[in-house]
Length: 129
Image (cartoon, rainbow, N blue to C red; front, top):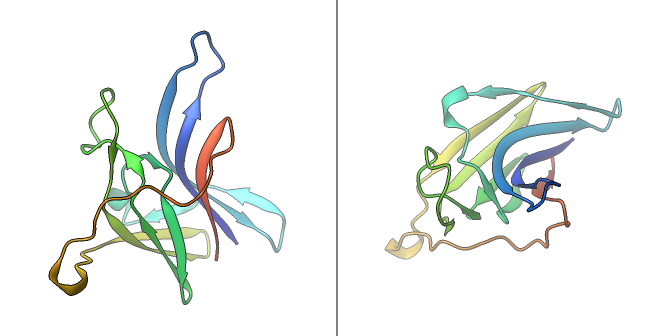
């Protein structure tokens, strides 16, 4: 499966407008179909962001950082580099996000943006599960 989370959406209007998304889509490679999974728990989806990092951790993934807004309720204003981390697990038609309190060697994880280069129209993160 391929899990796609979040990203930066740029409209085609003049002038173009940017908006962040925190939607989740999964591509099931066995049947070649995209679907929008059930989120568990539904209130624990990370805030909208782009340029975040994903890495695999066994059968799960870790989502870290990115660029977004400090408060998910903020709809405008400047972007910030985020330092939050989540354990992401994908199962049959469901995806779960568990916030991680990562403090290596007694220090909080430093905010950082991702390690991917965004396509021109949509900057999301891909991870293979």
